[in-house]
Image (cartoon, rainbow, N blue to C red):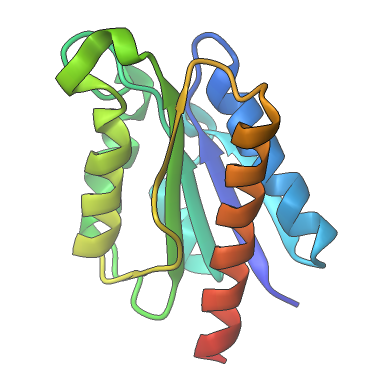
Length: 152
């Protein structure tokens, strides 16, 4: 059975909702999922997972979550070769060029760690409460699982 680790950083609860939608979609496909808040785990926890997911928020002018800075720095130092990853997060399009920058930065950190991108990143404006948002996140989860199965 595939194991997934889903890590979220959330101030408003929107990215926790993003994480929950992804986790539920993976569980519905038979994946064992561990979902945890970013300050409550270590990046090294991804070493025990087959599918690695981060759902971060971006604040101010493209800043990463303060509570996730150590996690972010440690992530890029890991050897995650053989792991499949994906990044999804919510933000506010009001911030223009800084919209969901944390999603892109975490994507780069996973790539630096040698993990294989299993799904295109998803960026949700504010809360993932539309049917379209939920479908995007479910498709994201499906892509991650498909990428994992292709590696087996």
